[in-house]
Image (cartoon, rainbow, N blue to C red; front, side):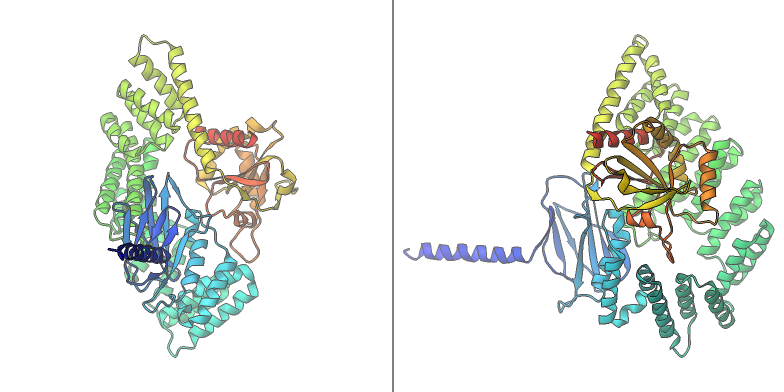
Length: 629
């Protein structure tokens, strides 16, 4: 018994020693813990969530060299088990909590993968850096061409056998550093390919792609001619005919070339796209028989559904050819429903849940088309049924408005009032919804006064304002705003550093961008509201736009629409597809609004357009209010 305390102490020591050793072999990722600090191919490991909030979404990407493959990360009792196959170079985790992905200070949660001998996978760090630069940006990660190029060249030097997976990307990254370097690199890769005894059709295609990245059209055409001579029934010949198809001026010419391609090569993805265009032209011309001929050539369910909706929607808006549009619109819904039961065509960059959500979103959009057609045909009950599906979670104000409109037409005033109240409370509303609500309210409450209704509206607006204000405070950024100098339409230089101390709103847009243009009536009202406020500056940065007469075309667009916008022209980076300021600010899609506070820091970034100009104006007002306080 005298030895028991010593024995007990030894057990305690051993327990804590083992426990500490176990902890040393784990890895913490915010509120998540990984059971290993080194991911080994084919070795299962566990991720444990130690937080107390609900996980909204969690996915991971297996990076196979430059290609990301998405998978859902499914937690059971706050634990998820993963096994990485031996083809994977690296892995990236993404956790969404409180409706926001944790980007780990823009570094993300990316890890190299090791083989059984604990040797790092070939190209692991190159895969990580390139992912940050590409797909990772969708989750708030920040990469750089410089880091990606360095990691890639180190990987290729260590493992030359992986270079075929990276040829085009290597040249593209090199172009951001030095045009001559990219040219030398291209020559090296072309020499490497042509060193073979017998070049395959794929080899010629790779050479052509390299020349395309150098924007050397003459060399591309030369390679294509050689490939067509050697492979008269190959891809180069097919591409040449497709180019002729898109260059053709008349519908008859297009049909003739289409027939030639189909006879020689059969239907394929590029020809499916051409068939979609021809079918749309036939529908527009009222040629239903030939519309069906081309539509029937389209094999993919999603592609065919897309065609049907694309011709049904204009008919729904105009009220013309509604019977035919109704049949096609319903067929588009049936096709998307069928696609939901067969996920074999899921793209590799989407997880199963992401793909299902994408299909649901597409179904809702097509249901909106079908509902509007039914409404115009007088089938109000049917319109309500499908519009109730179209609104989904009620986040799109325009779709919500149509739903309330249909309910009002059916004299369902109580439900219309209830739904209108809900949309106003969530901030996904329009002026028209408020008008419908007023009418519905008075029908349901004949003894209530207009003052009672006005008090309800005022209360809803204030609640929504507080809710949105809290959300904006939570999303506030504190990032350095890259400096720039751009010319406006009058040729005057506008420098960001001269605007310090003011709230600056940069609205990145282009004349070809539909959502940008849809948001402009709302932005015009924002401009008018703050035009006398010397501490608020709105700059509309035209970017991602080409054309010899770009400035004139932009100026004409602004003038024709009577917009009072201060427009800046974002300059294209020489020998690149990128634009100076958009590149500095990491703009990958438009419209994007960057709000810079008086401190000169980026405080907000708003991507896309919700479809509600009222919501857009409220968002701008609240951001400006926060930065002034």
